[in-house]
Image: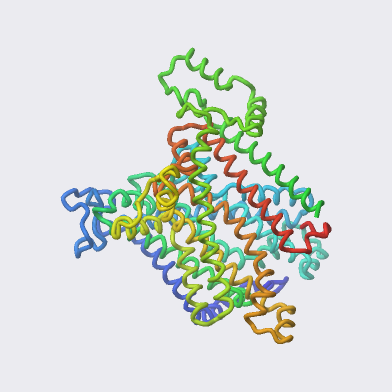
Length: 292
Length: 318
């Protein structure tokens, strides 16, 4: 494990050193820049967008990109750029909460399985195997069949799919740490399993978890867009990239540009997050670099 | 080998049973009254009671679960509320589209991914490798439904060489039917190919670093001969596993891609069943799709035993 933190050692890795190394990786820099841009756009849209997001202006409907509307207008004359900006908030919010649910429940479950072993571990791992039988979209379909479509239900569906991912990763990484000398020393010193997990295990697997969160965040953006496209996720009039693509598809012969920009936004975001995740992994565990 | 097979078979059956129980609990116990959902809020109580009795909703939950499970095993999936026909008939009609679509997508993604992955590994850190890795980064990031829309824009709207949607049906002839499945299959295959190419590249690179490959090179084999004769067979083991895991993503992809192209397959059926609150169809299809994912992973486990002789001894079942 890179940067093992034993008792008494400095917890903070040299972030300045990481940054100096990271700057030399083009993928990491591009990924960081794209992700920062996405977050910035989403934050700006909370206080300002070029036009009001939901205000219709039929006389200017389906316009091509122009100086007045940089990315054109949709079938109701709404500004596409403004809706894309507001859609970024929706994508980030849904994905962040979904990954939060996945990590929030998955990490403790995985840590518990590694710390207690025995029947608890068996139950957690069988639960993991079982959830793999249900692709995220299939579980989302089931959940929306019961609860009805909506952003909150898509968060639950994507979140549930994330739980086993984090549980499996945490258990796998923690198991080897439990055999290490510094954990043995902590046990000899009389620390309990919970305290050892909090003070020694989790800090040591934090880098792995951060990388996985970045990757899952990208997958959640894709899943949210897919659900919204199907009409199972975020509901109109709230803007979402998937819904914008769904509406654009019916207008493909009239205004093909409407189908381009939301897709580019999704692809750019996912690409940026994936590059960031890969870059972070290289930085935090250089041994993996050769095989990627 | 026999122990390994039995262990896998037991795990397969247990997973299916648990999955069926969860699907039943979620769909039958949690939601409101399916009969009331079907008849609407203005239904008369006696009509409601008659329908509840006809649907077996007045039986205890455990009995309904067992009846449903028995039905699944014997091939009786019940009758759709909205279509008024046995669910099995609906499935049979639509599987003729969804299964070929999935198979074409798997073949396409394998045909694209394995040569690309091997090429990238053989030309490690050279322009070909960088190009393949760039392709895989894009392939993973592109949402398949957007890629599908782009394909429609180019091939149906702009060039008008392939249909934008719909299914001609196999009765219309092999080529017309295949023509309607081509764009959906490509849209499904791309993200799968990107992931598979990455896994193939990593796996081949890892195998090329093994001692036995080095020994083969020391015996005088060229890099290419060592790759084809020794490395590839072993490198393909993790690739097969990933292909098995990808099957569930492929199914999920089918739900969305069939909707993009308005294809009357299982994915669109499940989607329509939700819109119409036809819970019996949703329940049956979800368990069938989950069962197919578990079955494919079971087959992958068996393939593993064929590809990896260490598993055949019986002692290394993990």
